[in-house]
Figure 1 (tube, helix red, strand yellow):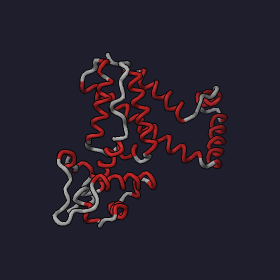
Figure 2 (cartoon, rainbow, N blue to C red):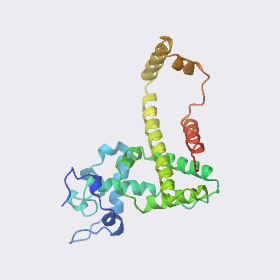
Figure 3 (cartoon, one colour):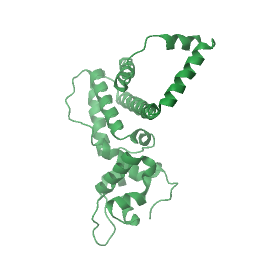
Figure 4 (tube, one colour):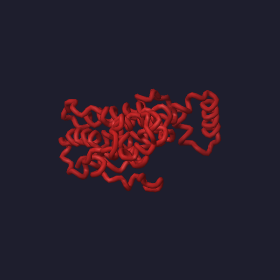
Length: 238
């Protein structure tokens, strides 16, 4: 039987999920698979967001009854784990490394950003993920290989990768929100008027100086690259 809604992702057993093949209940073999269920859930999240992903709607997409899905994903938390690892399979893991760990780490971050922009639900999903599936592990292995020249110990390498991923997820989440806000000219105009008023009130001289300075390129790619450079170039490996 499926776990109740309060079970949470902390209850996902990684051995059960990743080391043992999903098997349907006894009876006639179903016309779908765990891969098909996961792909259907990803497509639904891509189109409508994570809130739209319910077992009922995923079942409808694969042409199955809801109860028949539970042999493959006993709850939405498990399904989310499957979804994260499924899209992580899009990340290249055989691309040759340059040996310049900072350049390689920046390339990895750009790959992560591109993945998250293709799947805008992913930054939020990463904050609740509890397991590392095979695709995620393959990319982690690639990142750890990139960090080998640093001489950092194992724990520190994992921390650097976690820090990088958290930065990318946070930045992309903000980027997506900003893009949505930018679709409203009225809101942009209101924000500009508000900041101009704040800068002129005399109580925020530092902010006024910043706002009067020459602007930089504000394209999403340029902004991400500037922030990423500050993060990676400032990493201490001593």
